[in-house]
Length: 260
Length: 348
Ligand SMILES: Nc1ncnc2c1ncn2[C@@H]1O[C@H](COP(=O)(O)OP(=O)(O)OP(=O)(O)O)[C@@H](O)[C@H]1O
Ligand SMILES: [Mg+2]
Image (cartoon, rainbow over all chains, first blue to last red; front, side):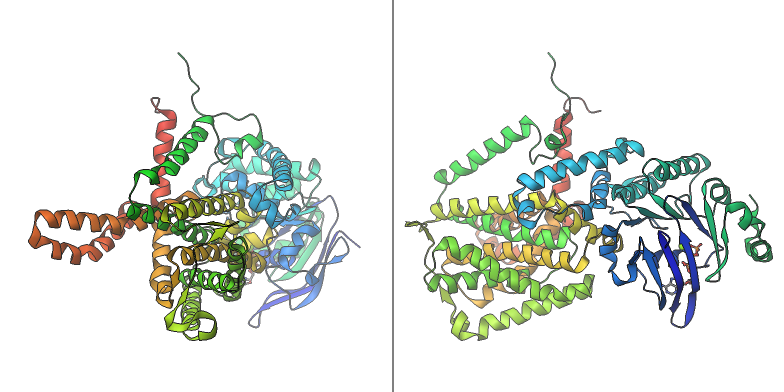
């Protein structure tokens, strides 16, 4: 069984299908890109994996565990984390605290330790702070450590959100358009970060991205969605040469999509 | 001559302290020394105001934990305060010692708060406000009609608290007791806010979908916020009952709930020190207006009646002006002043 296995997932909203019989796999250690035109169902797919939506039918397994049997908040401790297409940071918390919340599922001291801030709480806070500082260094967020996340520039907020997902030290990280709205330099940085997350931090990546240049450069595998169905799945070059994919893109208003 | 400019920390623990820096530690120490000595130079009336402030601090800080930090609006905090007072009276009349009455009242109120917090799983914002308003009305009804336990409209009497035979039977003694409990409550909330629990509360307030993704069980944590906040409110209510020594249902009406909300809005939502400032401000303001009305009245006798009548209006006006000119609360002003003095005289 593959590391992440999506099998025959169907999702409808009041009778309108967002996903129809979607199946694909993600191997451990890979960077898999999920692409497709607007409204193809990419975000909906991520939402099914992370637990925000529940598919009507089908199954999703991570490392052999049935994810759909587990409530969303408990999936984090099974090794799953994600970022959102629209920035979804905790605006009132500092960058540091946003990242510390990212480790919520990894901490376990109790209510009394919280209230008294003695032994276990103090030690845990200190240890987790160390791990978070590694992420802060890696993403070059140290100038903003104590700034409220909501007041930072857009590009930095995107990085903080990546940091929050990284802080969880999950096995699988879901990234929903991490480069959207970024300039060329920020996009290159982000691509570098994703590669490092994959290679150095050992996280498997499932990436939704519109920037085809990036997708072709960094993916080990590409899955194409169109109208909620899988159109093609395979290595980047093979998928891009697939006549069905070319037709889907060139035929529609998304011709620009392949234009880069 | 050189001094240190700004603050530097060598360890993460150093940075996570409640009062970072020697200056702040010494200032806090001096402040508390002054606060402990002050009542000796005050008359009974002023000391009684200090007692009320201490108790209000507990109420405001606990509501701020629930509403300001966790984002769960509550219009029932006054009634939860009442549950604490009635529980304290009931437990004390059973013959329990005060040291058990206090946490006992807190525990009963925590349970009550969690039950009335159940709708928060489904309801948000204004809808939750209405649900907690219902809690307020239901509890008021219970205070008034559960005669066997609450004494109905007749109310209940309490003896002054006594700990190991020491009776807190004067305003001065009550001042120290309420101060000690208030300080413990504030420290507890401050600790919660710098740990996993407090961060989860703020995460729920700021973006509940992300909170769920990082592994926060929304329902469990909202209930914890209700439980913790109500526990402290119960402790505050128990002190209030022991201090006034006579409780009746109308003391815990919707007016009390609203004034706690006013405290945390004026003080600064989600800020612990803001809750303290708000409680001090809202408790002192009417007394101050009284004082002004009386003294101005002495000078212009024909004015005194008009001034007294205007008091309520002035109270409202001050609140509105505050909301307009200090929308982020006193805590924000405090932060600005603090950072000004930290860098003084070098305004970088
Ligand atoms: N909560 C919802 N309620 C109703 N319809 C929804 C909901 N979420 C998604 N949809 C619909 O499902 C389809 C797929 O949407 P989705 O957001 O997954 O697309 P996407 O591939 O992420 O698009 P984009 O590239 O624009 O982000 C769309 O037709 C959308 O309108
Ligand atoms: Mg999307």
